[in-house]
Image (cartoon, rainbow, N blue to C red):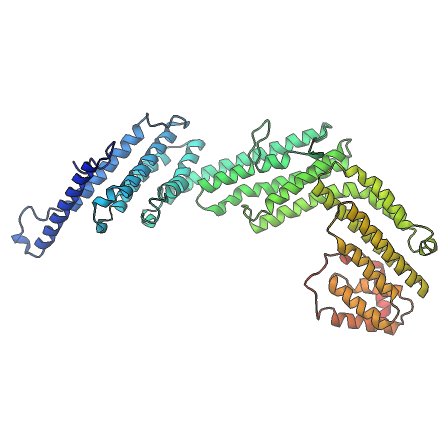
Length: 547
């Protein structure tokens, strides 16, 4: 009776005293059993050993079975919000396990001596019974909702919420209990869940992109939020509910996965579909830009924001993508971003080609033709069209434009023939002035990062200005250490502008440069620049110099 009253509807000190007295009697009888074990078997009384502990444990086991059976059948326990009888049954049993183990830990345990480890005895019985019932349910051809809920209890609620409750954590030997379901029962359920979730995520992603594509091709203009064009695609795919479809595609699937599946590495089966989605997204955007629709300007601006949002999600260190998945996704996003950038930079390249054709002419050297001033004035008018582009995206695009302006300047310079020392010195001065104007223009336009772009023009100008072979060599070594992508072909192209150098001077400079460029390589390299300056035309000249 004392055992059966362990979990009264309202606990009382009197009932606990009865239990404490019963446990004391059990201990006394166990001690008597131990004393009789030294006697010959034929001299033992028929009632020895009493095995009171074994009887006590059997009573506990039966009581636990009865309490969980009643809990499973109790329809008045407040689980009506759950959508199926299976869910309600599992929830009621799980709640009973939790409440009873907490009662044992908080009150019942003090009625037993520590060596009996009563909390783990109870935990073992509840685990066995709960496991047996869940095993029966797992074998009953569950639907996907019931399957997900059962996995939630097996892999998360029971081991994390019940066994690791603050009043139980560290006291229950969870390693001895193991999982509620054996692997041969757990694996089919997890495979059922994963297959369903993969199909669901693929459908959601296809639908999200289809809605967006239909909007592009129908000529719709993206909405303006906070003064810039915005598309909800990235937000819908990552975490926010779509107005029509109630999307919670990647984040909700990942969050649910963390609770439902034990082996977290299998999440790659879900996140892998983000890679496929981004490839499809890139392909669709490239095709849209190629067709040159009337709403292309606003759509591209909106999707540069999407690319930024996807990139932030993918590079989040707390995210669920593997390193390889991250790299592949980022490569695709870079291609998507470059597609948008090309749309805006193509007209600018045409402008540069026209304006830069006047560089290194006599009127430019004399200061009569303000080539860069004219260029920046035209560029300012073109960039006015970017005021409704997200500020961060606009700054990133301006950085690309800044680099393109400097890049084309250097390409034009390397194809120039300067036979006179005065041309080299005067051109170097003009380059430094132009570099300052270009830097100021982009800085005033909100582009704060690429100060090194102005530096590269000034460093090249210094190579042009210097006439002493030794000083030219020192400047080139410094340039090569700052820009490790300065190749042998680039060096030869620069030296070809120095018509005052002899062939022996050129060979000596190039040889010493190769010997010294790696001796003290700076750790603060500038980003790649010269690798984008193609100088294939100089190869023949290199071969001639080597001769």
